[in-house]
Length: 357
Image (cartoon, rainbow, N blue to C red; front, side, top):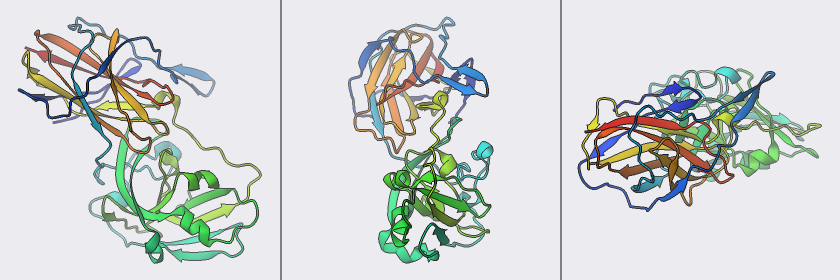
């Protein structure tokens, strides 16, 4: 199946559908039904001197309206993005960091595996470290990454050494409060040291069981849960631990791109029969706050079927599946949004049109 994504007015339209002739294959949770009483928050952001407003606009174009749709719902937080699909989110240029594949993540890699990094700054003595010598500290983590702007999702199983292990080897001078990982190209983004340690930043050398290789310097990459991808520096050549007059701010996701949601499959060319089970499937992600519910509407947002995602964590995406059926023939439109623990409703909803015969 193919995936299609189109921009509609101020919203985002995606597509998804899997059809089954009989029983749904997912554990049946009973979704709650709620009236549409929430205006999405976080829909205004500033660019230069302009305030940009984003909102979902009703798309009533003669679709069959169904209120309070019932069905079965299931979700998990598993799965990884194949390496040849992971975008270059590891910090080359801030405005184009998601624009092209990273050579270290391509299926056919060139270069060698180099795990050497230099550690300096406000430390008693600078030193060079081979991370392979810290294998006893090695950790594996399933982690999502997200751009500050834009809609790509990415998730990978990564293996590396905690930044805390390296910091623990350095004899820090008094009041060191900032860490900066510099790539071989000189790119680096300062981070509050305590923030990086609290987030369990990893110095990664293996992604989805694939050893990273590089043709320029180290092949180490910085990965950090619940942090935008501009800090995911690649080809780390050095780590500087410094004492700054003020602790650097940490960039957050642009409010318009909070709580992203996508529909993963296409309904192109598909016609479903009345009474057949239809499964909608997709992904939701918010960088920093757990997704607490996925909500579906089949009547232009007048009513919403609320499906809780209890136990979901903010460091990984939510794979969601919703199965329902329709007794009457017609053209339908499904709109889906997500809700986070801090109350943000997806500023950009995803929608899908399909036919029931």
